[in-house]
Image 1: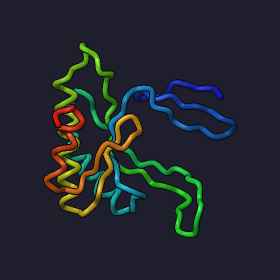
Image 2: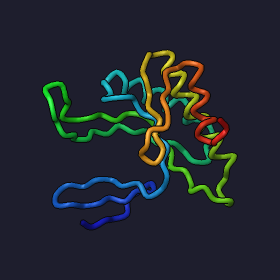
Image 3: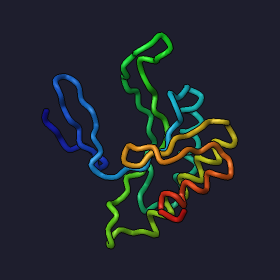
Image 4: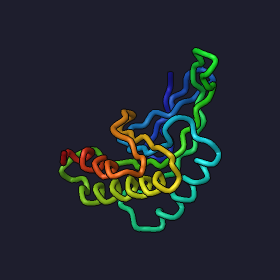
Length: 152
């Protein structure tokens, strides 16, 4: 397996004729729970375009990606559409702009929580490819930010 640097802190790993992206920096991902529909993707894109007009320390990126997944049963889908927003965050170091990280994480979570409330879309929140919470537009969504920063 060989790897090649790619944009946005990613590394593309090549294995045979297939390529996959391996994140080399910590990413926060807020994405539609399950496989996103075309309507989910449109709603997320519109929300992303509306909230990215503000100032960011770590600018978010829109994610719309199809991944092939193993099929084990008749109800399984052969592809998973991941739609949402990601932020490449710095490693937790004394030199990291903590105020910027807090602002950017809180802004993305708030915007996606408001979208969840308006549309009924449920979002998974992942950090370093591990699920750390959910957003459904309810009052518990605020705890995702507190939990992320170890406030609860």
